[in-house]
Amino acid sequence: MGLFDRISRLVRANVNDMVNKAEDPEKVLEQSIIDMQEDLVQLRQAVASAIATQKRSQQQYNQAQSQANQWYSRAQLALQKGDENLAKEALQRKKSYSDTATTVKVSLDTQTSQVETLKRNLTALESKISEAKAKKDMLKARIAAAKTQEQLNNTMGSLNTSGALSAFDRMEEKVLQMEARSEAAAELAGSSGLEEEFRKLEAGSDVDDELAALKASLSQPQLPQSNQAAPQKSAVDDELDDLRKELDKM
Image (cartoon, rainbow, N blue to C red; front, top):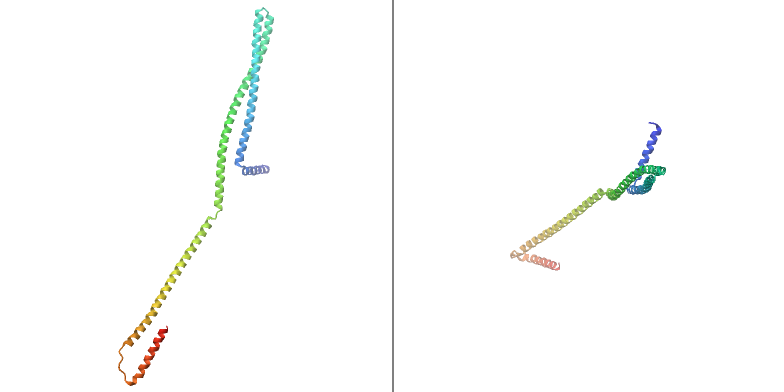
């Protein structure tokens, strides 16, 4: 393969690729309908022109045939009158018109066939245009649906779903940690209060025990004492009095 052939093929390939990328389906469909309608207009004009030509040929044929018939009648009349020369002249005129009619008839048959073909083509093109319009509407609806789906897919693709779900997971983990810390703090607070209650009970028990022992010692009967012990008893009484006073002040 020559260099110029390779360059030519490369250029055509690039041009075709550019054209394919630049093609808008909706615009191509619209333009196709427009082109078909323009062809329909031209075909209608061709049919009209062919029909007009056919009619003129039909008129020419009818006139030539009428003239041929008329000169044939004149030839008959001349023979009846005994004028053979005039009859012969009339037959020559009749032959001339008959030849013209025959020539026009050949052309007329051809034109009639052409008109019938053009009419069939016209009907077929009109049918194709109707089908094309219906198909165009269907394809436009499909194109719109495809564009909508493409936009939706692009939107969904641009969303960072995994990142959003990951953020929800992290926030849920933080909430769980906060709840756990709250429960732990409540348990610690309850435990501290319980220990405090027990400390109060334990402290109160020691005082109660000491008070009971003191009451027991005081409730024991006192033995008679000699005169030497009297001063000691007075001292104890004084201490008890002082203790009562202190307790009253509390």
